[in-house]
Image 1 (cartoon, protein in one colour):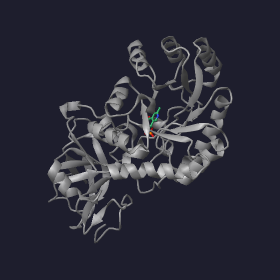
Image 2 (cartoon, rainbow, N blue to C red; image 1 turned 90 degrees about the vertical axis):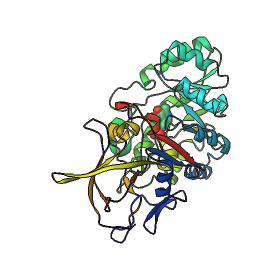
Image 3 (tube, rainbow, N blue to C red; image 1 turned 120 degrees about the vertical axis):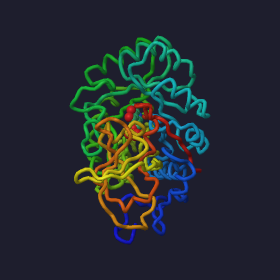
Length: 404
Ligand SMILES: Cc1ncc(COP(=O)(O)O)c(C=O)c1O
């Protein structure tokens, strides 16, 4: 990394220092920041492709080869140039969670039959809009959904989103769990499943898919528990006579700190193979984070550096509202210096420009002397950042660039 500090935990082939200068996707990040200005999100399409290829390779090495589909959870990032390019490479379909997402995916070239829809609390207008997309696959997450979809599309195939009462997440972070000890709004529990199948029958709906997404950000230490979730879902699977698909959701995580290790994807695929390899079922996986998160940087301008008591604050020209995950979910986004050649490492508290107490990007991060630097980058900003941004304090503007 520099003369004084050893190489950083997040460095990899396409994101690393060369002669003290940070390069991302073959570009000098300093030049990108100079050219694009800040705040700007930059996404590497090569990294997106590499993440998708890695998933395909691992699954193709199992008995699931030719019997799986990757659906990109577009709630993670809906930048239209990204979606249009994803369509071109044909390595994934789309997991959509609102009628507007379906419309955007279609406008970027995806055929409705490549889109799987899973969401809750749908209004009459939502059902109507969705029903007009022929081929769109609809997962019902409540009895309410089965009734409403059944009225509009009797005799069709549906999925049922189930809630196995077990949840998973990075480092047991309960905020990232979609099912578990706490009763959640997601999916149909065991005790209502028989009723759900009966309601489907009422409308002559064939339940051909079981769907579950139980949480986000899981890494290798969570894989044993993830396996027990797969086992518990067999209870639902075994009760569906006409099942052809199982959607295991997303949730595959990427490292956020020096102590996180990349998910052991071979182990993940072998667990999936153990439970579904011998079946005839088609497996769907719908990751957002795993495909996009580490493919994005957020470039921010440095506004000031000032000592307050024993803390050295470094201010940036954007706050938590344009990349809310660190504030909402305690997921740290590592600040990264664009030029480490000056050395002189010290600890900084990185602050945003929003008048909220939680608007601290990172506490006590070691960076070189930043006095003559103009920009800083945050890594892992490719997913759930721009897509979750708000205009709080009227500080919601940013630019986005796809590096091809
Ligand atoms: C139903 C569903 N599928 C997939 C995802 C993608 O999750 P992740 O980005 O953690 O892979 C989500 C995210 O919350 C989701 O709600």
